[in-house]
Image (cartoon, rainbow, N blue to C red; front, side, top):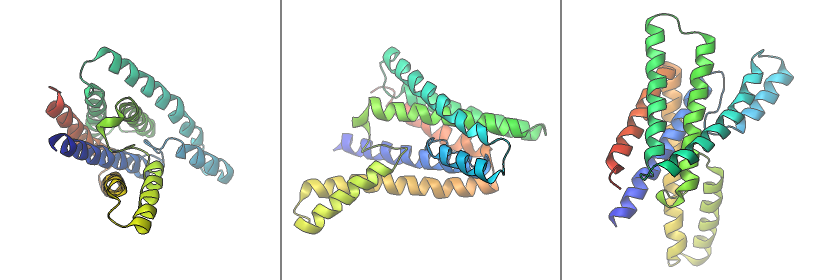
Length: 221
């Protein structure tokens, strides 16, 4: 039961962080998705057709950066006996990214290109989280950065529950797990929208700190 609870807590934390980071960069960094990187293709195409942004091409950089991050996550996993080491590095990157923003703002030298750089480091961090999800799929209830698959599974479970009722224990349990991921991501998106609008990219220190704490809690496992 304790293991099941830990999985639930980790899933909730990771989905909140992913939703938070995805929305913070979208709101405060020129509509860049840091978790749903394929969404940047849509934004890129829209901005090109609209002709509203000379820096639209930067959206395409998220894809190779994401790929490199996932590869890096795989290398970290091979060299570490603690599966949560990937999350430690993710948290460190997010915390340092937010810290740098606060320092540069204090020195009054925060620029547009700094904004893009911080957005890309956040993309890298989310790539590490995606790698963690693929390498250690049993550590969470499902993907924590992309909700389409979770919504699909929840819909299938709901259909089974409508047909068979709550006596379908397997579908009921699966449905509850998917709700954790979906609700967690939604909470993260809302928090990220507020943080991005009113406080900016510096608030990345918060998910970074939360991730580091998660690692420290699980470092002996």
